[in-house]
Length: 479
Image (cartoon, rainbow, N blue to C red):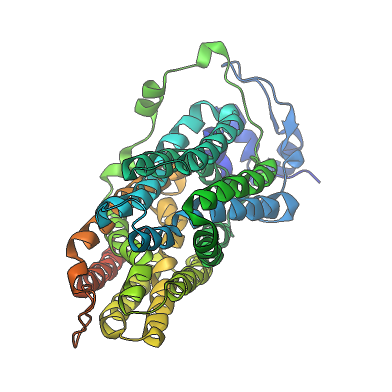
């Protein structure tokens, strides 16, 4: 039996560079009375506008939401996520090691922290440009991913020979960030092709790779740093990245056939950007979700990067700080899956409210009184669960922002939200570094202490503002 391409895939088909004229639309969305007959004739063929004939019927496409193709894509993207993002969220262990060992002399805490924040920020920000480029040169995505993998591996290898902190920022920060963003962003482009009804769950599993990697990698990284030093640690990570990402790239592929544009249809990158539908930028709902995502990230990343430093400030061994980071990331990946499922069955604004309110209370009531390891564990578990799953709302929110008639624009919305989060990934830790007082690291006060009181209040306040943003999005949502 021939498969009929569902109506919601029209936007995805157009974004893939496939024919989108009225005759093609009538084939993929026939009237009910003609659906069976039209389905047998549906194919991706030349529309006389430069597309190369594909000769593929709808029944030959892999199924949506089910099947080996869909879930092997999820599994491979999950592994890719653990490498690119999991390694980034492990940088707190590197930072604590650099500060404690004075690896780069008297380099400031802000400069050392910039390595991790710049990498994360560029990974988020570069996604938007990759998504846009993919719409014009979709057939070049595999090549781009392999090139970006080479950049990631080379940047880590070169970083292992650095002697100055600015060199580390350039290589492990800037170069790895750009390569990582280009390597991972195509997953966002392919995801709407493979999943529809279960998109939230699939996204939660994929994006949960960061938390999974962030759970295991800090323990491995701490062992390698203490045993071999940071230079060999980076070299080992380079080899590890090469092997696992190579395996992942074999299975990360589009569901829809890729159409190579002919010479008459080639346009410049800037022209292509101008032709995009950017009307969503003026949507009150988009502005609300963007600001909410930005504010949430301002609070999330300081906790991710500074919990190891906070733990050692209490006089606890460095390994305890590593375990705290691992537990935090494990809680985050659990939150990703839970909230991703909720977004499939309930309005996403409720998820924003629960996430923001829960994270805010945990910062005020748990981190504020975390004077021993037990309370620290309680804080990172609750905060990780509540805040780590926030990005699971992006697929549902992006679709809601553009509406059912402009689903092809969803990746653009996703990219812009990622760019905002990338900017916050840099600004948040910088603000935290300014609020942190390392000269008070041995001073315990009734509320908070160890130089982190202002950081604690900042994180709690930003998460409270996130909950307010969730309330606002409920009034603006189409759902």
